[in-house]
Every structure is written in C-alpha cells, then in structure tokens.
Length: 330
Image (cartoon, rainbow, N blue to C red; front, top):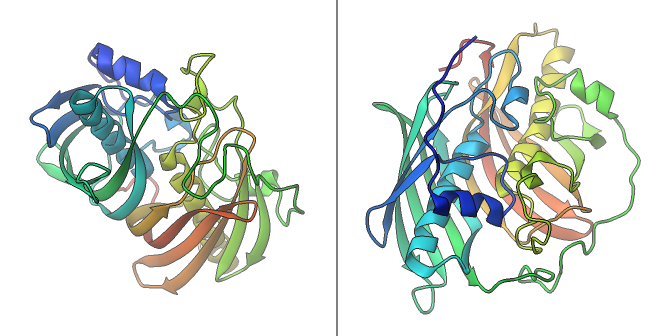
C-alpha cells in the first residue's frame, strides 16, 4: 500500500473553481500565476482521489485524460486571475498530447503553461502549451486551445450550433454487448469504467459504444444546487477517456481471440487533432465510434467521433495506444 502526504490546502480561488464546473477530481492542488500569459500548477497524485480507484485497480496510475484535466484547471485559474470569474475557458481543440511517463500515487505532477491570445480581436481564444513533469522527468507535453466566454450562463448552453443542453440525446439503441461482458474485458472498474454498452462491432477495425451521462456521477458531487448549465457540462477529460475505453475494448477482444495471455493494459501514448464541437450534460447519451486505422509493432493508431443523437460532439483525429504488462509501466 502506498502512503502519500496530504495535498496542500487549496487557495480560495481554486476551491471556488472546483465548484464552478463539473470536474472529475481536484486536478491541481496549487497554482501560481507568473504573468498574464504564464501559470504553474502542482498536483499530488493520490490513490483515493475520485475515479482513481478504478484506473487501473491493480496498478493505479493517473489517467492521461486527467493530465489534460490538470492543464485545463490551471488554465482556468490563469483566465480567472486575468479576467475575473465571470469569464470561462472551454476546450476547443487538442492539437497534440504526448504522454511520456506514468504518474503513480505519491508522485507530484508539475505543470508550466504558456498561453497566447488569438482570434479576431486577440481575446476570443487561447492557444496553450503545457510542459508536465514528474520531478526531472517529462511526463507529458500538451498543446491545446480554449474558447473564452463570459456571462453567468444559468440557462441552456448554446454550443455554437444552435443546440441547448439536453437536445438531441437520442433514444435507446439495441446493444451488441452488455455491461457485464465489458467489465470482464477491460481493466477498468467503478467509477472509472465509462462504457455502458456496445452497439456495433467489427472484430478488428471498428466499435460503437454508448455512455449515458447522469447527474449522480462523481464529477457533479461538489456543484451547488443552483449550478447553471455551463457548470453541468460533462468534463472533456472524461469524454476522451470514455471514447478511448471503446478502443481498448475492441483491441483487447482481438488480442484475446488470438490467444494472447492476459495481464496487459492498454495505455494512451499520444493524441492529436481533437476538436470539441458542443457540450453534453446529464440526461444525454454519448455514442462513441472508434476505428483502429493501423496495427503496428508498438500498438494501435485509432480515430473516431462522438455523437449525441445525430449531433457531432467531438472528433478525434489520431490516438496512439500501446500495451504494457501490468505493473511494468514506464
């Protein structure tokens, strides 16, 4: 059992920020704004953080999607320091992410973000690069963009395509694989298992999965009762994780069919070209499509989309995943 020291007490701004939007976990413990364009943040990796107990239960590591969440929370702190808490930054695109070292309970993640304002008036979007380290080791390199929006936003959210929260959630669909078989295939557990059903499956190349979003999920636990629709937007980090678990399910089923032994886990190594088109909220059902475009000696290259009913929620241009023996992660 790994013992870790308690994290530092968060500042009032960080604590307020955690209640201003749905978050999977406190992804930063402290932030320091260095200038109008730079912020540093720190996160002690804890085995008892929300969602962590299910990723992976036998050899817990900090998910790559949560590294992106840590960068997001650091950028929010920078935006609020510069513009006030009425201004929000929402992820628009992930240009590229490379995951270079695993983060285990007891490790400290140190983040340095540099932001550049772009857009017609120079203030509508931020391009951010983030250097993420575990001591002297680079853990990840992140490049992503955020849209800046303002207002209290207590009503339905317009996501730039005329759709409000809850619109186009879609009706029930017939499942090809139910939840019990999913649980027996991928090395994720509650509350980190984010695939509910398999709707379509090509054994080698393509899978379609579904994930129902409910208001009882851990990411909504800290929100105030009167939180508006913006605060209830499902965290993009969890959306990416849910999509990627579909790819892991497809890949591991193929490996098992080939007679490969168990004891390995799929690890996200890099992503590129993710675009977020609209938000999703409790009551919506995500439909993820994952394609394995190439099998390589090192792993697989995947791409796909996420829909809410007929509406496109997100596009994933490329994701590289590798298989690692359990307990032997880099």
